[in-house]
Image (cartoon, rainbow, N blue to C red; front, side, top):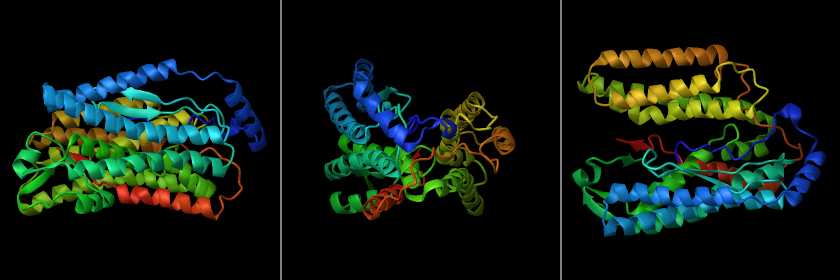
Amino acid sequence: MPSSPPDSSDSPPPSAMPSPEAARVGGASAAATAPLAWRVNAGLFLATVASCFVTWFAYDGANRLGAVHAVQYTAALLAILLAHEFGHYIAARIHKVDASLPYFLPLPFVSPFGTMGAVIRMRSVIPTRRALLDIGASGPLAGLALAIPIYAWGVAHSRIVEVGDATSGSMELGGSLLLRLLDHTFAAPVPDGMDIMLSPVAFAGWAGMFVTMINLLPAGQLDGGHVAFSLFGPRQNRIAQWVHRSMLAFFLVSVASFVARDLQAGFGLWRVGRHVNNSLFWFVWFEVLAILGTFSSRGSQDRLGIRTRAFATFGLALLAGALHDRSSPLPWVAWFVGLAVLLVMEVRWGSLRSESTLLDHPPTGAEPLGTGRAIVAIVTLAFFLALFMPAPITL
């Protein structure tokens, strides 16, 4: 899911957009006359059910208890994802915007969740800022309406184990303000030297909130980008550039701070691989957003291209994983040289150019949201801050 395409729309470039009035008529007509295709969607959903089940079953142990846990995890996670996607779908139908049913994306074993999430394709223009807010905010809010109580119940039924048993050979999940509040309220007290081993249901709730955090990034055509554009209008395009570049800055600062701490403690550079891998999420999503922007901004002058970005990002991520436990600095010097080359290309031809429009949002009608919807927009964006995890997954 962390690597799922979070973009829930397929709007044409600004130059191809009709007037709001034409969009309303066209969208309503298309939604009313187009047959509802569902067979591919149903097939992908069933494949995702199997993918999530098999991924947890293999992790938990191929036994009867593992099968029970896999069913619990799969049911909880897919309930959250279904709520999120059908929140978008129902809001689109209410506003007469032609939208597909959700396409679920199975990814067994490669993704720790067994899925890359789901996407909905918008086949007509979202005509007004009010419609944009309703469609953009409905998914995250509907998903959170399930993810929060699912996590609360799951963490209340999680085991307390010794720290070594909780962390040995497993990944450590990041925390956020909202997660800390839920842990403080619903989890059992944790003595010194102990930690919480999340139950399958709690892990599904955590995954749902993690996916929501990604979707609420106020950039491009992510859900947060839709909500922010409905609130700020064209000013959001500059905000999106700042948010996008701050992700790269966060990655670099995170690695530098960990390395500086090690040097000060006398550890040297032998743990640089761990620090790069634990911070790499933000660099990968910096590039993923640029790739998604290339798909949706067909009129952009970006010359770096999807293939170059995808190949370079995948190569750097794969190499970082392979070098995770290497203490020699020479391979990591080569890795950072490769990173520097990619960033120079972004500055010259890509998303780091001052005139880049990759993260620009297609325009909508200029009428204001109104007080009620503005409050909804602010609350929805505030959830991003409440869900923010500096290091979502560490190994």
